[in-house]
Amino acid sequence: MASLFQSGWQYLITNFSDFQLACLGSFFLHESVFFLSGLPFIWLERAGCLSKYKIQAKNNSPSAQEKCITRLLLYHFGVNLPVMIFSYPVFRYMGMRSSLPLPSWKVVLSQIIFYFILEDFVFYWGHRMLHTKWLYKHVHSVHHEYATPFGLTSEYAHPAEILFLGFATIIGPAITGPHLMTLWLWMVLRVLETVEAHCGYHFPWSPSNFLPLYGGADFHDYHHRLLYTKSGNYSSTFTYMDWIFGTDIGYRKLKTLKKAVFEDNCEQKKQ
Image (cartoon, rainbow, N blue to C red; front, side, top):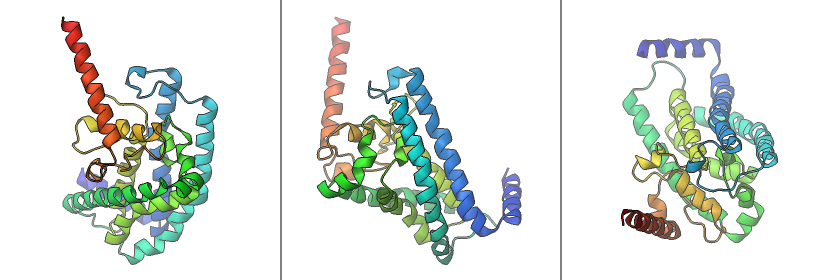
């Protein structure tokens, strides 16, 4: 398996330049993973499938969904792609490489864990700043146009926010100068995580049911439902930053109340 992967990587670096792989390859991979993971949630919402797992009863109109897709394509080609192109020299300067040999799984795992922790910390404080009055009104309110989020709304944001919070995603790789394979893996995991957090569904197999401190869709959906001054739940991936700084109090109270109601209903059924 390892040799097959090495052969596949050898084919890429033989037929494409570092620039093509790091910029165009990264963009193609991002678009593929993002839309393939996000579009099914539009279908679920329109078809009414698995509705018992939907967090909010409200659905988005087809026109609202189409508006989101159109804006996303505009932002991705007009903002994301140029950022990837212009940041390439920085990553190369910091040591990013695409050549063989591939890094060991220990190196990859340690870097990915570091990226998640650092991204969550930077994102938390940047997100809290975006919920101040002026920044919310002029920038972050675009993202909150969808009070009932679905997968693709995860990247629906003002161009300034894309740059501002995108910094949280790239700062880890920019510091460590990883192998391009590690950068691609980080991008895939980060896209899947943010799509899941905005999907609007809490399934029995949702990661938050198995991973301690992981926020997920239920955690972030609460953030979208409330008024911007009271929403809380600012973290991107984990829950500990909100717990430490007390910005998840409303969410925890709601969870406690729902649990009490559920237990009360179970007791009544037994009687």
